[in-house]
Image (cartoon, rainbow, N blue to C red; front, top):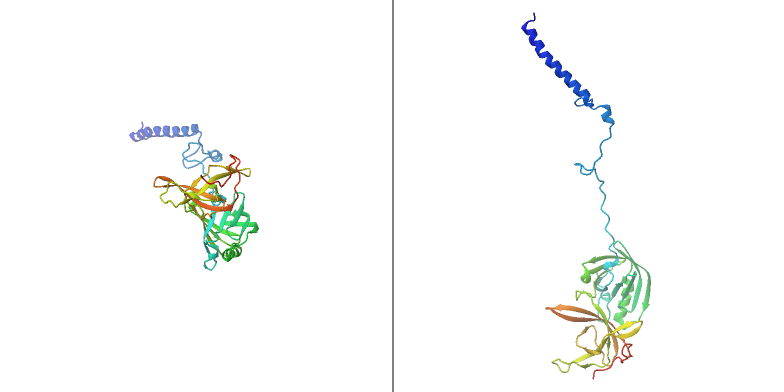
Amino acid sequence: MPTPSSVSTHRYRAPLLTLVAALLTAACSSGAGDLPGHTSAAAATEPEPTAKPGDARPAAVTQRPPPPKPDPGPQGLVGYRWQILLATAADGRALPELQPNAFSQIHFEFGDDGRLTIDGHCGEMSGNYRLRGDVLEVSDEVQQALGCVNHLAQATSIAVHEYLLSPYRYRLEGRGVRQRLHLTSRNGTQLVLQTADALWGSKPVEMTLEVAAKEVDCEGLLVAASRCLWVRELHYVLGRRVSASDWHRFYGLIEGYRHSPGAHELVHVRHYPLMLRGRLVSSYALDYATPSTPEPTHVNGSVGGAVAQ
């Protein structure tokens, strides 16, 4: 007959054996074949899953360097008539011959066709220009002599050929008509240029005025002795003069222009419509003037230069 202690031992051994058997059966039926902390050979050879849209951890993306900034190109240079404000030599010495005076004003014009023209002295220089980063190169330069009116203009022309040497380092400062252009020549000459429109703050409308030889009385002014230009606006169509307005009194002033009595001229001006205290006013600046002779237009056959009756 079993003793009480042996009965107690058998009572607890049976459930224990049953539990171990159940665990082994579950492990085999699961197909994992892995014990905690171990990986089976089959599992080790399985490829790792790739990232899918919506996964918590997306696939890594290779970082690319930012694209280089595009060359600013000529768009900041083209469309303006640049004039020299300040010119200094490499040693810091001022070059008054290149700065504006009563007889000359050096201008740079960059064409959208890749041509650069430098004028305003006793001649004209032109050539092809190219931008490479901050370098402005001018090649195939052509010089055209126009003749000097006095020794000051001649000194300006000599300075142009001595100091304005390609290639240049260039830098644009600001925007629009108020921007400034900084040029450093290959010999160290430094130039500061602004647009010819900077004073007015806007781009102009270019006009050609035919100015009669005789001035006329200004009507409606308090000063009876005032004299006005007698003008009409012209257009050119296939080389022909075409009247764009009737003859009329010109009450304004053209900056830089002074009419010589008896001179019939074609005056090319820049017209700046400006708002002043809420009112539209007009300012005019001279580009250039050329002598002319009255001739019939191809609109109404009237003779230019006729004086108001």
